[in-house]
Image (cartoon, rainbow, N blue to C red; front, side, top):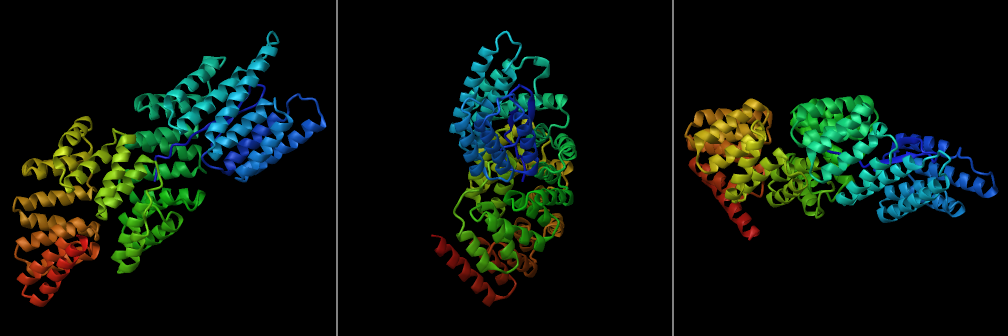
Amino acid sequence: MTYPTRTMLCCFAIDGEPMPEARPRRISLSLSFLLSTFFGIALTLAIPVTAQNSEASRLVQSAAQKYRAGDLDGAIAAYRQATALLPNDPNILFALAQALGDQGATQEAATNYQKTLQLYDQLQARATGAGISYKPGMAMVWNNLAVLYCRDKHYDDARSAIERAFGLWPNPNSVPARFFVTRGMIQEGLKQPQDAVHSYQTALQKDPRNADALLDLGSLLLTYAQADDALRVLQRGTTAAPDDPEMFAALGNVLARKGNWPEAANAYNKSLSLRPDHPETMFNLATALQHQGKSAESLEVLRRAQQIAPGDAAISASLAAALASTGKKNEASTVLTSTTAQPLTDDPWTSYTRASALADQGQKAEALALVNDVLHAKPDFSEATALWGSLMLEMNRGREAVKPVADALAAHPDNAELLNASGLVQMAEMQLSQAEASFCKALTLKPALLDARVNHAIALLLQHRRTSAIAEFREVLKADPRNLKAHSNLAAALFESSQYVQASEEYSRAIELSPDDADLRENLGTALQKAGRPDESKKAFAEAKRLRCASQ
């Protein structure tokens, strides 16, 4: 699921020759290769061969092997021992700082980077007149400090650090691409998306195959609803980094945004083949499978995801819904009652998807809280604003949604989700012809947007165009047989058309999807009463009463 921006640290050799960057948020074979390359060069330093240096060399090699294997504790312990033997070797101190940063010990990592800078200052002072510059190494350290500050959301400090890195680099025309990626990350944190896009593009001008720049640029474009541009960038990314699970996960998000569910599922599957047991990607794969009508496959993926992340509210909500739809209501109830933790991601797009899942399962308050977090992180997120507006309407706070939705639509007039949300606001105010026009425009832009189609049918029903509304509800249910909103409103349309038997059937199908909805039970009772089935009607009314008493 995903706007998976990575933080990125740099490796360098002590003589100032820059090396490829390590990616600290994951330990993988590609990272191991980079580190082995780094240490292969680092150990060719012109240092007198002594027993102490030989032991330090052995420890550094051992630390590199542990780092490759993902044993951060072991790597850090070995680096500490090597640093004790050679306390004035900035290269070893840098490697220790990097490993500490990977482990999340950002404060200690920053302290070690600062010590590394002091050692470089001393080396530079002794090298005066010798034609040796340690400024490239110092610039690399400042870049990594900027990344650490960015992780801790200290964006002003991060900005100061990256500008120090730029200022120290000897030739402004040869500044490494990775510095521009770091600058872009910081600009995103400072909510300067256009500047961030420019930084990522500059990084790609310097290095067209820079995987981090491609991933971060594509993810940022997706967040700001530039799906076609994001698709092109991320397709380049999968060519440049064919073994990068985050790249394929992000590509899946773009394809899902465009409604291309089969290709989205392929991308998520590829990501999981490279990084198994990743719950966010599993969640997105399950969503893509569900949109293709592959309910059994989706259920199995959700089961695996929930085993890995049992405290993830959106995964649990989706799993419970899938279980309930197959008649496993007791298991569904157990899943929901055992979930108390918050979702496990800071990714805006994935969080938005999860908020949508919570909303679909009737957990409006939880969905609203999550989408509020998304909009705090990314205020100009059209789809999230649209979902927020819809939730506000459903929670009887529609008046609060009018201006934010209108402002967002003015900024993004061709966004189908915002047009759909605007139509809902208009329909709530009984501006039915305007609402119908908004839904029609949304469907012209995005025919696969089923919620807009359901809302369009509701607008028709409110204008007493029942035959057209019934036909449109049925078309939605062909595409999505588990669409609760379509079932319940089709039932209402059939009831208004005096088709009480069919209305009873549709209310029953809606209750299968939402068994604890007292209103649906009461409506079923009324439809059964009109259909001449008094005993069943009494049972439905009694169950509605029981549910209402239980909820008080």
